[in-house]
Length: 285
Ligand SMILES: NC(=O)c1ccc[n+]([C@@H]2O[C@H](COP(=O)([O-])OP(=O)(O)OC[C@H]3O[C@@H](n4cnc5c(N)ncnc54)[C@H](O)[C@@H]3O)[C@@H](O)[C@H]2O)c1
Image (cartoon, rainbow, N blue to C red; front, top):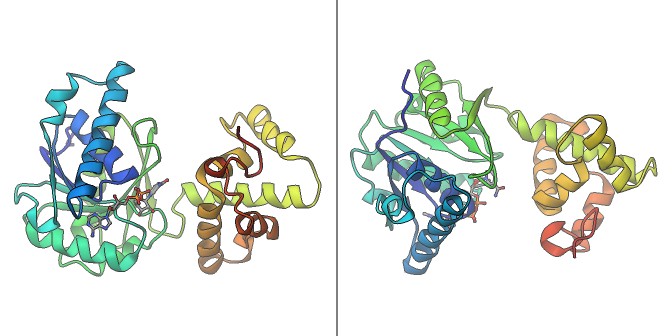
């Protein structure tokens, strides 16, 4: 089994997730090309990767010095500019199926036919994205978590047409990044969001029913079940608007148990989106 990362990696979209993914592969020794549209976006993406590497170095979590690692980064303005030798391309553009299909098709045309393509989507169907490609057997989901450098998990999302051997190879890459892979068949919410969101929604329903206050509900899970963070605090961290959008999608695809509680809708409408606005189920100074 392959225990190294590919020598050349392409990351399409150098935003929050893309920059983190680029940082992880750079730190593991790969040459990484980040695709970002336009001059300002390119500079911002490079800045995000550089900041992430500086932070890792400060924490003593980077092998080698920042400048040497950054030398392996290039930022290009289109998937067509990806090197033909690229072994893996991961897209991390905004969560829109048409946009993801477009950039994946362009990347597929630029790299060799045996290159692996992956999506970092958190909610779209990997199976439907695969249908846009000429070689769906070489495509799968690699669902990284936010923030990428601190997060230990990557869901390896397998679509019906994904080649069986690719699952093991991708798992080896994830472990070479110092993270843990879990294999999940493509289905709404994969493993993580499906369980995490359900717990969060039930916690909100308990708050609505007056079962306990937010602090008590979170503390019950933190101390009683050893969750590092209670379900309401975790909803505040992710963003109530983000959680609502995922819940609506899971409601449509998986049924009533994911119906968003009215309290969640009310808070989103009131602009109480969690940590980023200073108030959600808890308040943040
Ligand atoms: N933020 C999270 O917590 C999280 C967690 C897991 C997965 N995801 C998924 O990762 C993906 C990216 O999310 P994000 O939070 O990094 O978003 P983001 O908005 O921070 O980054 C998206 C980046 O894509 C760039 N972009 C837009 N169109 C492009 C194009 N045509 N070509 C190249 N670059 C383009 C944008 O300039 C931006 O920098 C989404 O699919 C999201 O669902 C997000």
